[in-house]
Length: 205
Image (cartoon, rainbow, N blue to C red):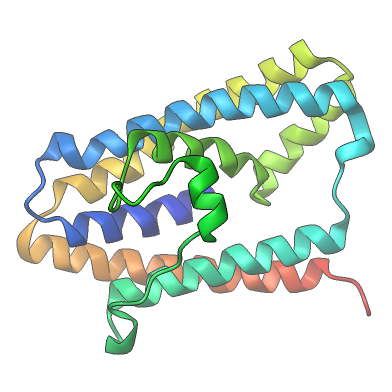
C-alpha cells in the first residue's frame, strides 16, 4: 500500500520537475524514510504502551483502505493522462492542518519537514504488513519493545521504498514518459485492489 503511494507521488513529482538533478529528485525519499523510521518507532512505542485500547475497528480500517485506494486511483489517472481535466487538479490537506504542520505559503510544493512528517504519518495507513506488526507491538504492552518492533520494521522496508523512489529519479525524456505511464497503470491497479479490499472489510450496515 505504502509502496503504491510512494510510486504515485514520486512519479508525479519527477514528471513535474524534469530539470531537477538526480540528487534533488532522490532527496525527498531520504527525508520521507527518515520520518517513517522515527514515526514508526514513536507510534509503535505508544501503541505498545496503551495496548489494545487504540485498536481500530474493522469497519474503520475498511473505510481508510478505500480512501487511500481512491487517492491512488486519482494519482494513477494523472500519471497516465487519460483525462486532461485532471491535469491541474490536486489533493491538498485542509488549511488548518497544513498550518499546524508548518506548510506555510512560502513553501510552494516541497519541504524536508513535510516529507519527514508524511513519512511518519504512513504509520496510520491500513497496510496489511504494517498492521500485522502493529498487532505484535500492541501485544507486548511495552513502550520500548513496541518502538523497537515498529522502528526495525520501518528500517527493514526502507530499502524497497528507496528503490521505488530511485527508479522515478533516474528516467528522463521518452524513457521517463514510458515509465510514468507504466507507473500510472500500476498505481491504478493497486488503487482498485485496495478499494476492493476495503469494501470486503466493511460489515453489513
